[in-house]
Length: 378
Ligand code: SF4
Image (cartoon, rainbow, N blue to C red; front, top):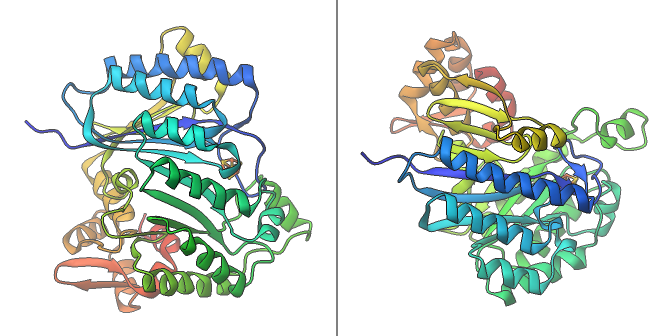
């Protein structure tokens, strides 16, 4: 029997400092904390290999995210990757991504990552205007992004992503267009364009509350989203998901797993997994994570087995984020299961969802309201 592909996510929970908008689980970098974490992670790889991953099941993608994976020493990252290879079978064409903050990586680090088998670098550029970066408390400067991408290419990376954000405090439509144009000059194979959202308990939320920073302007964000589609589409990037654009053949294989209800194993504190129909998550606390692994226990704190209806719900909610959409039969079955028949009919009549050749997908206007539509269908 052939098993469906499996992805592996590794959460590195450290950053040099916290950006104003960020609500991810992480700690500020401290060398001793990092060393203990890496020991725990290597142990978790071994325990997980014994307990979760069915023999012969191919790992099609590995994704080091965070946090900022590249605050670790490069040898710590490559050691983790070697341990993964030793304990788990990776597919021969496995996509291996490392997220990097541009100011935490050198040409030598990049060469070592490439040599260790990393196939894809993802740089958190956020903006290509220094003023935007300082207004969101994101350390570093634009020239560091330019240098990091150039060095990655010199090192031999051919698959490079840039993450950028729009709707930032003080960012205008014109400065967003300049950011996109500057990104294009760096010729990435993939661009992720995220609308700024204000998460609770962040410095940004408190700045907005105290009127030190303007709240994101939804109308402007819509114009920015349209500008991205136009500029990136015109440059040969295909929008394949609400926030993601890629050159042909460069869609991120790992992230596609999430949107196609594929299975993945998450390691590291707070990492989430979906395996054999069960969703489970690691404890979001580094001390508890270390303690659990020191006692030879996986640091899992909750498990939920999904019913068939819940699996279909997730396939509909995540699948609608993809431009190719989902089978219409799945949408209508889900609507019946969860009492969303009237809501679904309304989304269709408002032309926020379109149906064609047996598939349902968000319309151009629907893409701009993807999160609201997902809430309505949950
Ligand atoms: S670098 Fe990324 S993960 Fe770290 S604080 Fe900033 S946004 Fe959050």
